[in-house]
Image 1 (cartoon, rainbow, N blue to C red):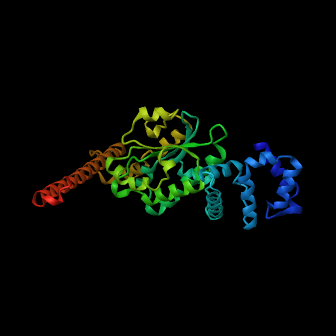
Image 2 (image 1 turned 90 degrees about the vertical axis):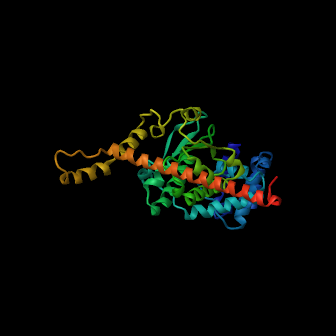
Length: 344
């Protein structure tokens, strides 16, 4: 099948100057190719490809080099054979690629502690680690759209350079550690989900969301509704850090997720996570303390922050449960004084 398409492309290239418009073949040249190559029977099974090229030619739309046959096949599969839906999705992704800027590998370096590729899963699919919780707690609001851009860009680089015919899909691990109900990045999550589903169809093999607090998990149901049914089937949500679950999917667990990996990526993340700001603040404050006074270590400060965060999550969970109990009591009282309003 690939040989047939390559012959088609070579034929187009040879006759580009004499019979092509905007780099796309005309109907006459498509017919000539069928006759000259004797490939009409092979092309019959790929009729959607010829039909697409013809439609794009009629509308004066040029197909970017980035969208190759494998990419087109993913879009066609996602459209379930519906050509009108397939054509619409291709036109939409062409327009999107004309305006959306994909970050370079050098630009992605500054985001490498929050979104990065790490080894493969058990099915040999490349694994993208997204530390959503770290981004929510460590980034100001105006930086978050850039974080979403980094996620999209990493997926683009992964699809171009990491997937192959044997493993055409990728696995995404989303770490939500640190997310609180007041800091859920719903806009980023919906934007990324929409862009990935529209422009990278059938690229996702598995989506694993870990360390998502129970209260946040309930709120996240609104985000899950945005996902297409085929994507929902690939989604699994885990509340706590579960090494057994991670080991089931990943060949190597990154150190930032509690693993013992010492690869270059994990080592670099470990260095970046050193509390340099806390150390600098303590050094600046040291002259104001007497020699006999001890200053808190950065590790103690970090532990205190985690303790405060845990207390806040516990308080919020208790508050939600309390509200639910009040609603139940009100419903019972209403049922006692107004029997007709009872649900049973």
